[in-house]
Length: 497
Image (cartoon, rainbow, N blue to C red; front, side):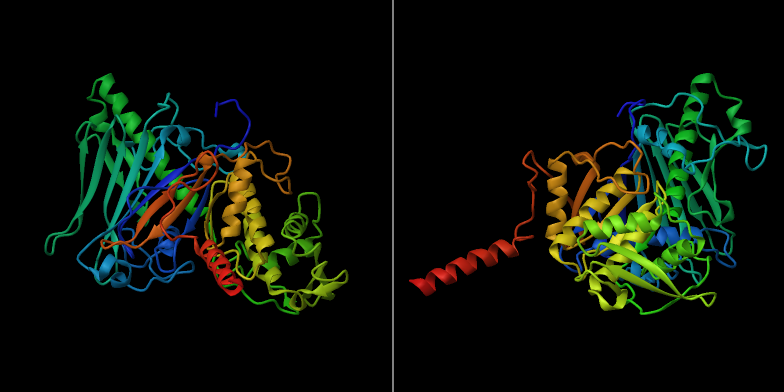
């Protein structure tokens, strides 16, 4: 897309997992604007989601008595046990690594059209006068990529902690920051470079940051000629762009797990303190009640957008929050058109409405630039609604939300392929309905198949051909319906013979 073409820039991020749960080495795979994780049970899909949630959880949690960033294995987004549980094959002596890679051109254009910026490089010297932190003011290349690898090792008795950071900018150079501890000696960080002038940069890991700053040593920088200074500035700027991008993306990310609360006949309003839906979507109704209390229904309201999508999924015509006892914080949710023309309490209609409600509400509240992780959104939904969810996820991806869906639904994948064949234009629905966005293309979609191998789980991207059929579908995957149809025809033929 050209710089002047209207629409939302949708960067594609690559991820690699090493020695994490089922993965010995996943190799790099795409986290496209719309990513679907498919595969059999216990094949590694949830491990990909857990890696993202683990890093988000570690970013947000503070740890007592730590000088370096820990992996917070137990927290609000996931509970992964201890180090023996998360390291591949329970090999405690091995380290866990997470790698990210991104095109420099995508980083340059990640301004998200007025939303909160991913990066903040406005301060040239944010720590002290011994280091420079350059603004991305000079021209950066349109080609090439940048990557970062974070390695965590056992650190008794605190659990896994950051032990190595590696950053590389293609056609420029690489830098590694390694933690060393010998005997009773206090930990020490050493920085090694290749392609970048030695002793010119230093990683800053203050404040228990999972993602460090890459600073330029002022005393050394002044000694270099203009050519080397340019290399140092380029390496530092591009590296910090990726590190801040990842930090911002993870902080904006949310998850809806496969277990969601059952509908209630009455809801007690918990106040305006909730800022996110929660891993099970437990705050979804609270958000609707908040909007009702504030009487903020309008053309871009949560109620209006929710009504559109519930109707599109053919689950109901509308949804309304009713105040039962004025000033006593007791409400009910009524649904109209769910099986009858009359309005019914949410607990009296099909279970599917209450189960998809958190998926829709959290998706509509997502901030541009975050990752929306959804596990099995199709639970308790009939095939029409499962297919309709693909339209919802296309809508989110087209408006700048990286959407990662773990699914077993062939209906969802079929609708996705159909929409791509039809041009990938998202449905118009509030909010953001007036924005001019680009249609979703095949390059914006990644269908990732996870499967077991002897050395560990693998990730394989399924390619869509010109006929929008999967060209490299693994043998036996998603063939059960066809096998049963053929077996049925064979059985009928034998009965009539």
